[in-house]
Length: 60
Image 1: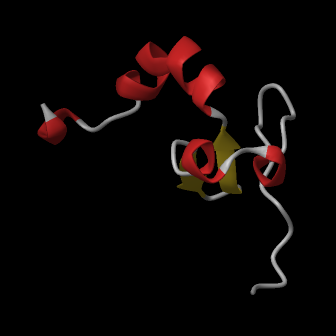
Image 2: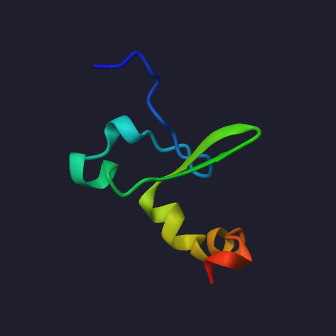
């Protein structure tokens, strides 16, 4: 058990703690200089092109 606060979606505010164990595995995280931001599965699907646009050219 950890003392970390539950992750919340940076777009819609949904809490990862309220998700089922299977849905909790589908959350996406992004870490940058500002810290770690989380996206719930629904927001990640909606904004997948924005996420792909941030990948470095070497990835492709």
